[in-house]
Length: 261
View 1 (cartoon, rainbow, N blue to C red):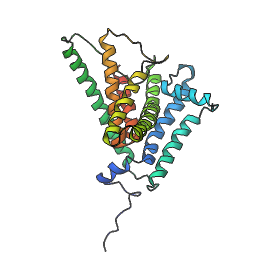
View 2: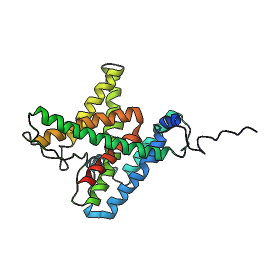
View 3: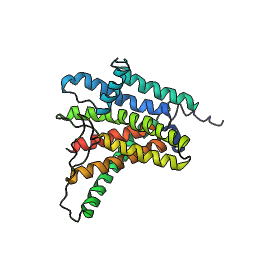
View 4: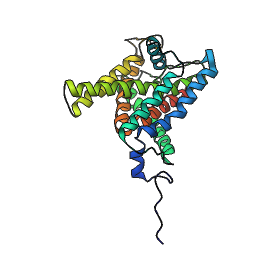
């Protein structure tokens, strides 16, 4: 008797299915949910010692201006946005085994690749400056912290909330506006990627959580350029691989930097 093929929801998925399923908003939600829970729980447990991600503070402040000050509203909104997005795709509401761990491995690999990009950029800038004397400490994409645990917690929040703001919301809005007002097609996407990445880089130098702008220092230019390149990197991931992979790679890179300190 012929064996009946197992359904994707009850068996490990094939490679070609993995690339499709891992891009789905529902799978992104399943993947980022543990990151979000650990971040929010960590902030509550650490109390005054906690370091909130800057974008988290901005988003909560914006919600408070709208008179929506409930503490748990922001993570609930993340869940609601991804569930609503998945509903619009009309894809099945299934979470196959194996996809989650495949996404985790992929994010680790992408985090190491971004770290490699940072090293290549540092070498290139030193060469352009005509000297290899310039040194650059590995640049994190979120606010640091005095304690290693607090720093790791903050970086987890950065992976979710910065990707929510700069890729899902800002890039999405820019791409839609440019496509409908200025120019259509791939050009609109390219312009949106570059513009949102520039905003992403600039945001790291704004407000009380921002870094100092020191025009004459090598480390400033290294950090600013790298953050722009990272914005492009995450935008491409968001387009090609979905929100979950972009958020996981973002958090993974920051954690690599923190562990190396």
